[in-house]
Image (tube, rainbow, N blue to C red; front, side):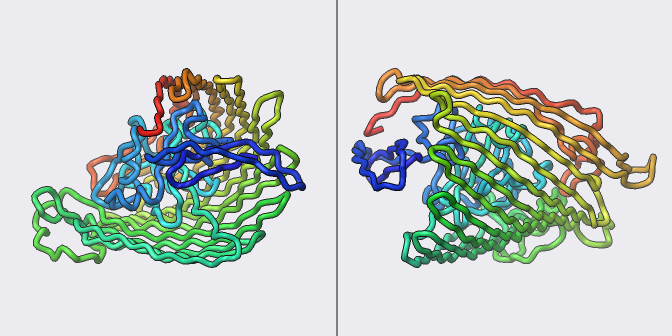
Length: 494
């Protein structure tokens, strides 16, 4: 097992410990580190600190997010080097890693690939920092473990830790935003024993329109939301299992050019949604299970995500029509992890994902469609004294089938489509410790990404923009090559 030893004011240490039925004793010395603790990466195949991994990785804690002054989670992530945001107003924003965003960044929640149709610039990430311990950002080779789409990187929202055994604890968090007159608050309670734990949390956001640099209100940048999360877990000698449920409801005002003038005299604290706005809500059910067999373990993650996106386009007299898209996602991910595979550490498994998109609004941009994805992958880690080498390979089979929509040869017509893609991703990375505080990291990755439903079939006008998007059913897989080289220096004081 990978055991984490940490204490405030000291550097975190991760060691491999062989735990059997008998009691064992392990003495660990933590080096003094008054600056900060090293983040423990749970996204990686093996628990490790950033100094023990060859790929580009970073982490931001819940405390850093809360004290960043950011209005949204995406804005807080811009504190991580290499991450920017693409935003429209204060509420609608999405992360950008190395110039890529949307479906080229994969978000993980409790082992489940989160997809809320970010294929359009006005479709933000829409996630709260409520109930998380922090966010991990992986850029580079290890992303192949989570999907061929993760060409820019992976964002992993790490869930909060369970309550100490035998105790019930609660907490109340509140944040006020002076610019938007916003309030973010959440209340959580959790408890459990040595073998069972539970948790529940409820929170909400409410923000008025934000003020620009001239202290003038930017119309229709308001947003509000409600979040609920709960979960139970079992801790046994051979089995660790949890079941979690998340619900989220958000409304985001959409900035339109014709609204830029004439409404700035409205009261700043006004929060009621009007004219063009997005309404996004989802139900997410996940389960994570780990079965231990000696030093090896089998992880089985599964989940279901029901995401509804409605786009209210404005007054009925404009006859713009409203969008109403329901995306249902189901996924299963078994993975075998062995720390003793020919003097190496092995992580191998497969992923099965099924998605179904349905339209019920008066306007459509993408058609009704289903997608199926099957993937198999393997990832190896070797450590030879001061040298760490990691390599991986992933094979994907991606099938998409859409239904015809509209009248042939008319504006907005979308023809039926059936296509198959077979993207392959490979990567390799190394870490060499030149001295105890100086490390050299090098990574290379190459992979193919299949086009998504919107890129293949979209045909429609997006609200708040002058863009009319038409998909190309002849698109081929996108090829990505990436090389990273870095020199890292660590000292107890810096």
